[in-house]
Amino acid sequence: MSPAPAVSAFARPGTGSDAVSRPTALPEGARIVLKVGSSSLTRPDGGLNLNRIDILARLIAGLKRRGHEVVLVSSGAVAAGLPALGLDERPGELRLLQAAASVGQGRLVSRWEIAMSAYGVVTAQVLLTAQDVAVRRHYRTVRSTFAALLSMGAVPIVNENDAVATTEFSLGDNDHLAALVAHLVTADVLVLFTA
Image (cartoon, rainbow, N blue to C red; front, side, top):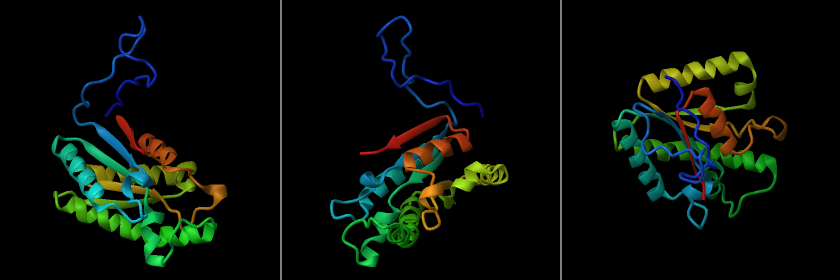
């Protein structure tokens, strides 16, 4: 599968002789990476917004029915873990953030699995570390895993393995992670849902 031609995000149709028009449809059988930010998945009280997860699951199922492959980069693990740990707000200390992410990651992926299984979509959890994209052997293994999952029709749900990430070896925010994943899977399209 060859990547779609690059389209400048800054060119506006009809704004000059070198203006680039925006695509009006996805390429057939497109490989799509969707990134959903925490603010798009949480309620004002900090809990997971299950309605939004259901809406996005329906969207992903629709894309799959149209023959597209989808990889989901989902934020929200820390937010999902806070209530279970009795925390009212996001902690500032790294070890407490890691604890909240550890508790919340399973809860988050479980919610995605429940929502997507209602549409017959199989999900898979993929937790990445900086080594997975920096060390060639790890990188090849991760690419191979993604290829296998996508070839079997699964939707990989990706997040950084926050429980073991350190500030020195972090992949950064999930927008950056989504861009790395898009490269890993040779995506045709990267969509960032961020409020």
